[in-house]
Image (cartoon, rainbow, N blue to C red):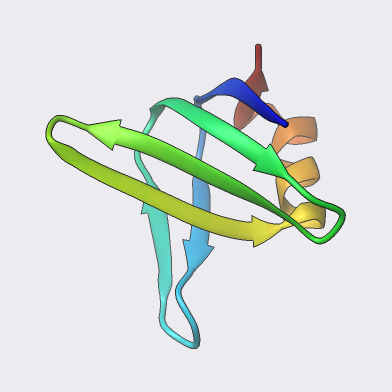
Length: 69
């Protein structure tokens, strides 16, 4: 199930073994499973998506970096 959220703090994800990548502040759609949360967003004509472990997603919500609607 998808829900709307807002990135309001520092939220990062990692692609493979690469460095952490910052997700820009703004609206996102969140789809969760037992293992991870997928955040997707639009930035003008560009679209982005990132999967993060569910524990990290819950931590970002608890810290206030992600606000659920």
